[in-house]
Length: 218
Ligand code: GRF
Image (cartoon, rainbow, N blue to C red; front, side, top):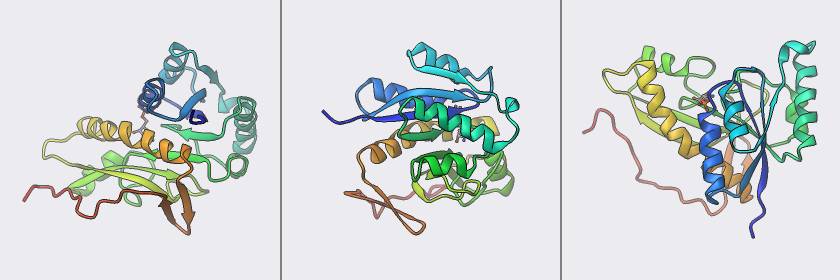
């Protein structure tokens, strides 16, 4: 039997990525088990999703701590207390510090709703619409000390359509997020990821040299 990697997931909101990861894992498609979900907001729907699946759901408010480091130390204690091996950030609206990163070297992932390094930070879909790009997407990356700057594991491209709003575009991006995040976790769990400089190497990777998305289509 394949050993399952123990995932601790941090979220602040809806948790649709959490749901996609739980669903794949429950179907036996992912060698990973979400062992705890932590949110900084008491009203995060991610908490309910976790409880529904019998996963430990923890609300840890950043307001109860003197600063980012103190908050991250509490996160580390909770994550380590649950035997977490991989930390997955999914819509976690907090900047994390080296306190968390040093406790989980090369084992903190994030997903961003744009093709990094384009449109980092908040409101990535809005930024893409305002800039007028024809394609955007999502990026799963290792987390480093910057904001949305860590080595990239996997990206998915989605077209921007003439009538798109932030909502319609977000929906299309989410659809890809729910495929790419579990895939990145699978690669991690299988021990296939290594980092050389900024580049993430995937052992036994199946790169496609002719994949393309041209938008508008030609
Ligand atoms: C996703 O769009 C992700 O890229 C961003 O936050 C959003 C979280 O969505 N970092 P959900 O809470 O998983 O539905």
